[in-house]
Length: 88
Image 1 (cartoon, rainbow, N blue to C red):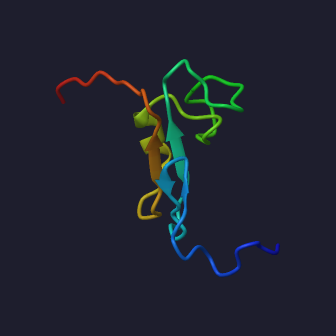
Image 2: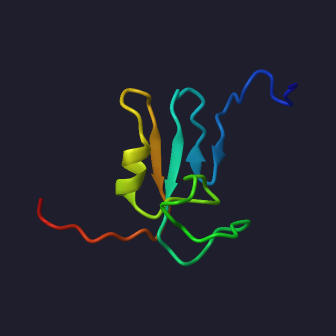
């Protein structure tokens, strides 16, 4: 597929306020447990979702379980996420 930017972005680029990561071999998983859905989302956060921005997982623990060792997966946590921590 042809690109409008075949030479990349000389000054870098950010999407949703995050720098674009062009070189990472793994998957990207989103986590959210807020009731405020992002524009375009039609489903609430759930660990049964696919972990995409519009269908985020509900818990960080589940997202960690979806990561593969040494693959370079990334977990992004949406604003407003809360979690209660207990002693291990």
